Image (tube, rainbow, N blue to C red):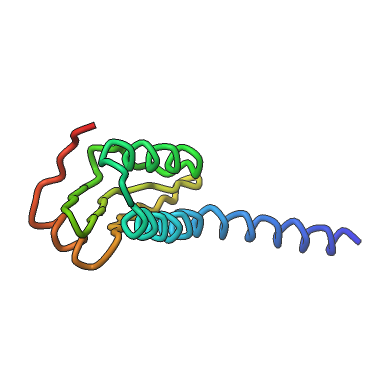
Length: 121
């Protein structure tokens, strides 16, 4: 009985640790999907409106990304959105820093690396 409870507690503990250290990767994947969706379906929205939509999404998903870390470029045919941010997960003495580069497309990621990130919000 006690052995079963200890095994169950250990299972829950490992599950929690897995969630803690995997959630930034999952959130980044969701963010990249959102950036692709925003760039594809930007329609008649301005950059300011897209930035507001993105900020709302970041607050909703609790992603550690500031607007000054987001690169926007819009022209008559395309919208490029890319970001660069880091987030850290700590558990007792162990910590891991993740560095992410989500982008709406590969070309957006390349353009953001050639131009400094600018904030016009």
